[in-house]
Image (cartoon, rainbow, N blue to C red):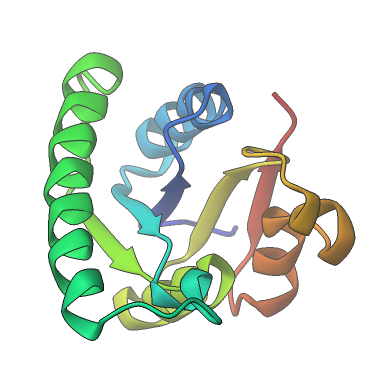
Length: 146
């Protein structure tokens, strides 16, 4: 029988992030698994082509990360009572790459993600984040349709 001891929930703070929580809670209880929570912030690559001074992004990035840390703590406090994550982290960079690297580093057994979160033109053109994670991941991925 397949067991999962480490489950990763990549979140983006949308309603879709909430949709995965009942599934994560059920599997955490069934397998006595640890939950890992990951929020991935956009990195400086989103500003390619703009003439910005290098220190601008450092200050901006620090402020964004500090805000994301608060949002992550609030998300856990408001939505994960009784099944708090073992670890909650923030990464900066491209979502699919950072999520799959994190999963490899933490030896994650299962990733649970929503079928869609933020709808952007880029996602429509290049495919969904969930699909990218599913293709790139070295472990099973459960995609929940909210």
